[in-house]
Image (cartoon, rainbow over all chains, first blue to last red; front, top):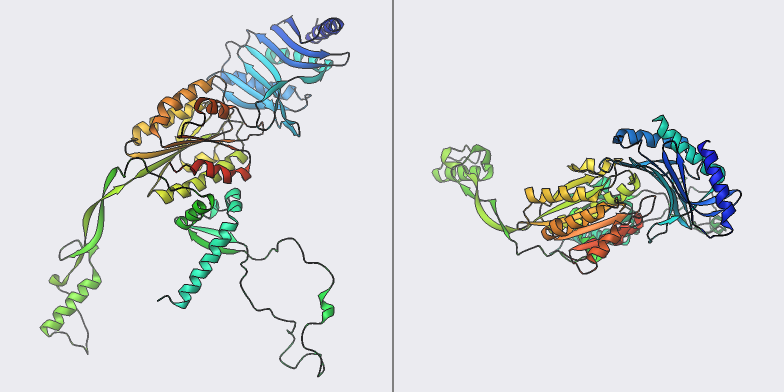
Amino acid sequence: MTVSNLVHAELALIEKGASNSSGPYVARLDVSLGTLEFELTAVDSMAVNLNYLQLSTSHLTACGTEELKQLGHDLAERLIYLLEPITPIEIDPEGATIQMRSNPPRQDDDGTRYYELLVRRSGLGLRRYVKMPGAVRQEIAGQLTRDVVGRLATDFVATIEKL
Amino acid sequence: MLKKIDRDRKRFNDIVRGKIRENLRKYVTHGEMIGRKGKDLVSIPLPQLDVPHFKYGKNGNGGVGQGDGEEGDPVGKDPADGGTGEAGSEPGSGHLLEVELSLIELADILGEELELPNIQPKGDANIVQEKHRYNSIRRVGPESLKHFKRTYVAALRRQIATGTYDPHRPRVVPVRDDKRYRSWSTVDQPESKAVIIYMMDVSGSMTDEQKKIVRTEAFWIDIWLQRQYDGVERRYIIHDAVAKEVDEHTFYHTRESGGTRISSAYKVCHQLIDSSFPPSQWNIYCFQFSDGDNWGEDNEASLGLLRDKILPQCNLYCYGQVESPYGSGEYIRSLRSAFGDDDQRVVLSEIQDEEAIYDSIKEFLGKGK
């Protein structure tokens, strides 16, 4: 079963059980590289409210900063279907972390919204934030179609495999 | 007694100062003076001054009595020429008057407008500096210090006294005994020394726009502190995840892509103070600028270094948080919760955009520390 199909099957299950319980719904799927985990606050037949999507893997533990940086660039090239393009913003050699963010972020009357994808030796994690002037940034759910969630999961796995 | 031209010049200078004061917020905000700063003077573009001037009518076609009119026609402008339109509301694009102002005068205007208190140096003029003043004349000395006027006066006096001076052939030839040389005396002068240490986050999230804000603010801080101390030293530290001391040009023009670790800048700052600026002899001012997007786990280390190593050594620690495209970061909150409003050595300022620079300078320098 492909990663995308696994995700779709899990989403279908969550949707089915959603009538009996209120979110958030956490899913953990075993994929070839490790564990794919995502949390949803809402789900329907078309789309989901995604709190985070995370791929935990041991395949990156030996990677240096340069390889993680390359991984960041590869991800930036693949993830072109999100609300905003994301690119590496900061590279932290000490913590071996690449911080990728929406570039440019979306700015309107509701504040500044952006995705943040952290590339670490322990894996990848995507979240969405909103920052209102004078307030602490808040994590918010990103609204994505089911297809996009499947595609994201596939691209996470494929990019690491290609490295 | 004051000459008329001096009085007029003073009046003109007062008008210029008034105009600069009126527009100071604009000058501070837009940073247009930075490129115009010379060694001691700043060239300032002023809007046209409203000084009385002659207005010429429409009589450019010849001399007196050469026009189209007949005898008895009223002299003056045809009322029909006035038109019905209204005056424009946009400022004209005429020539701007450039005036040169000394840095001292500019600092004074800044201080008056922002109501900045004069700085109270640490200790009481705790350093005694030996200064040489060329304030006497000797008969011996190096040729490079020869006082020509005095030498020739001495030679002339000798020639007149000995009767060898001929007014019809006024040749004055100094001999060895006529020579006079400038000489100095050494005076002890109490002096306060100051150093400004600028620290800037140049990590990937700091864009050129943020750096421009930092540059503008630093320019005005420099102007003010130079007014307060003779020969202020300036040092520059940039950091992303790693910090280093750099020159002024690099400070303003570097962009790195590393992560933000503010503690790295504090380490370099502390080393710099330890190696070059003993706090007993120096008034130390630290100005730090960042978008505040410090990597989470670094906050604790940064606050510890600031509390234990930097603050005990400096007069004032100012932190300016500029807003990056991702909004202002959380570091300023950490500082607020760590130091609150009680610590008089710490000044925090959020600089959302260029317009906020003016108030930020006031926050930073308004304590008179």
